[in-house]
Image 1 (cartoon, rainbow, N blue to C red):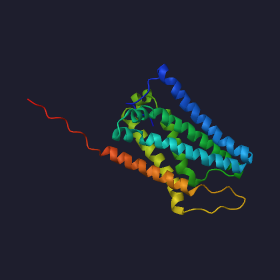
Image 2: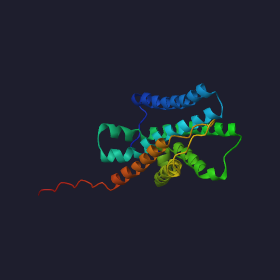
Image 3: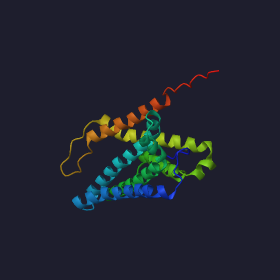
Image 4: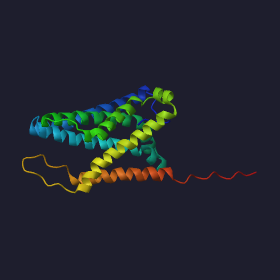
Length: 222
């Protein structure tokens, strides 16, 4: 989730924007729970909507982390460089947002009187991977883990990507679901399509950046 070559040193001039990032993520996450609560009261409907909205917010932050390096490679400008320089903090912000989503999901399951099942193991493993990447998103971890740091974060971000793709792409394959009277309306099929396309687009950006022709060095004149 972090990137050793593009990190913020934590100087006073950079601390405020980073604190605003984390504070903004926390505030948005709480608002995504507050709005359904105000509309429906704190019940299973509100908890389900809370989980749905925070999941979409999390995947948005994940996409920023996922494409930060390829867009900086393909389009070199101050905006893309700034995105890459803040990739570590965006990754931690994603971890925070997904932690809020986890709380929302657990709340919904408690209202349902159920819990996680064996089939949820891959998704729960993704939560564990996110925690592990967040815990090692520091310069100290980069130094201590050495080459294993890069392997861990590369495997982790691709595993989380596959979980998101399975969740949203799976809904796309299933097709639109009709609303049931008295139940929470199903998630927008269009939203699932958009997220799936965005995830696959992120892969294409990574491939394009990896195989981007490198500029040839100018010939030396003797």
